Length: 606
Ligand SMILES: Cc1cc2nc3c(=O)[nH]c(=O)nc-3n(C[C@H](O)[C@H](O)[C@H](O)COP(=O)(O)O)c2cc1C
Image (cartoon, helix red, strand yellow):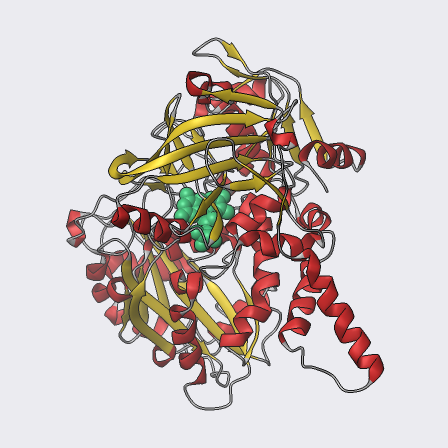
């Protein structure tokens, strides 16, 4: 079993661990270091040996580990195999049929016996995670180096908590990874969103008027936390996936003050109960969309016990703008879940979620179309299945397309096949974190069918400065213009303007230039750089709601500006997540981080 301290020793030997002995503050400093590190091309796991809370004069005993999934290489090593290998095994199991012939029968039995490692085992007695026990008033969250990541955050948050829950009748177990806000020494906010399994369990307790037991584990084998974020179907305990990937049963012990079982080798366990009769305001929190999620009511947990290993390590992550640790965790999930997705979409060859699409905002899918409308059929299948239904924008190509991860080639392939007719705009559920839909939880969906034949380019492309001048002659307040992929049938023109009226006015004003335009993306003056396509894609797929913001006239218009009363938008529009300049500067001066102006610009740090 690879517990956290053994994992760290092995990472150190491999040169994949950076140990930082300088005392650093749990308020902003430690998260800022991890945020910068994960964006580097050679990012490593970080161990902060001396976390402190400067404001309260506390030096914590336990170290903080961050960026555990720091790279593709480290993630593959943590899995023990390439995720594609695991996917192949799942595919084989899904197609198992009772065989004929003695040799085939033996190999069939072998495969089934291999599955004996899948179910978690419940052990008797206490586990290593219960070496130190704090009950009653001693069960204080102040013992833990809980981080405050961003200036506008509502407080400190546990960001890598494995949340273990069970259904009211005790027949179903669940492990989910949800952030947890520390309100005080004995109260945590439970940010399980409405679509998630623990929220369904919570509904059962609420209806029955019963308190809900919850245990939160931190640390242990890093695969636990990966399993916690994996989109397993409702009713399937994520630790079954753990047993399958690790080829070893998860070994569980009972919590001290409730009936929830947790892995015996985790570093820290927070036990408690949720009173379903009252909710508390949770947030704001700088989230993995790169925006703050707004204040919302969520259930709160009253802590009844904290137990730890003899020498516990506190694990955390930092979220914000991409790339983040979830790029590497998500890669594992994407690969391993392909065969399962193929059971509901059999003609799906492959799919990919680019990191700057923050997973639910953009998906690329390669299919083998057999009939007219096949791509559209699969779009609806995606939007109707589990957590895949959060995806806002889905682009479908056929088997003639290049690899989905070859971004330049795949973009060219798509743009050569895209016409206003290739767009399907509809409605569905959206991720609870989505800020752009006119109402929370429901919003526009955009599907692009790029499975057809390549179009002949007809756009009369002008130089950027010539086009800019013509646009400026038609509309005031234009700041910058840049065209991309001008050699394709659908060049993309990005126009930045100082927004005082809806972008639709500018789109309409561009009508005389229609022979020079195919796709026009509008961005506003705030923190956008028309020469930074990585962050532009992030911005566009975050900010648009296809029903409102995509226009199919003589050319396609996409309004990626921030929305406000000017647009008739009545929800609060959140801020981008940005670093605190003084914290970055101070860490740079002390030599804890290296990041120059180009790096800051490239990833929208400020
Ligand atoms: C870093 C990170 C943070 C997350 N935070 C939350 C969160 O606060 N709330 C939530 O509902 N899901 C969050 N998720 C997504 C869930 O972990 C994921 O949807 C998981 O499959 C939920 O499990 P469940 O379906 O068993 O509830 C997060 C994922 C990651 C990678």
